[in-house]
Image (cartoon, rainbow, N blue to C red; front, side):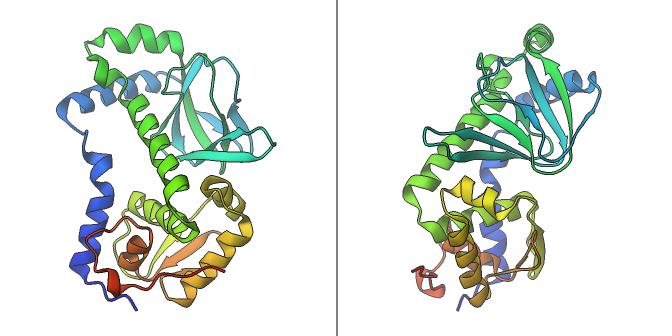
Amino acid sequence: MCRPTTRNTTMLMQKNQVFQHAEMTEETIHAGQSLSALFLTSATELVPAGRAVCWEGDEAKHLFQLVEGVIRLYRIVGDGRRVITAFQFAGDLIGASLQGDFLFTAEAVTECKIRRVSRKSFDDEVAPVGCSSHRIHLPALRETAAAQEQMVLLSKKNAEERLCSFIAKLASRRNLQARQSVLRVPMSRQDIADHLGLTIETVSRTLTKLASRNVVIPEGRHDLRIVNLACLTQLSGDADDFLEESCHRVSLH
């Protein structure tokens, strides 16, 4: 059984959010305001669930800002499998790496609202504002950091740790801290499996085992009740300072 305290839970949530807030200096805020002002000049577009915003291999003529909803970024690998490299949420930029061609397909998981600006507008309007190079490319650095985090997730963690990391990250994004909080998970289990390098059967089996330990409990197709957030974070392998003996790992067979 896991026996976390409120203080432990709060500390773990703060630790998960350190990366997101580490670069919020005065300079980066200024850069973000410049980008936001540029996107506000564009009309909002509605993208139905399942429709692509851009396709892998297409010329990257635009950058996109996700205003509302969730988008999956995926690639098709040599054997035809779909690999979801990331999920994007409101406020995220798509195409921030500024490559000549899109390295992924961006597809709406839910109905989305987006804004787009041309690469030329970005180059003409944002760069001359006086933003230093590292501020201009901050979204690209975050995109690279997210890719590196995904590589670690797939190469170093087992199935249980991958799924717990994914759920804990979603909970951190939603700033869930209270016990018995319900987390909305808009993506399907197949999406989660394709993102974590698992089969849908393994995802379902792991959720069942986590529910049996009162860590998280599925409620319908898209909701998870977070019963024990501190235990979930430790099972993800990201809570190094949590007492190891306080939480038993879920074994998969």
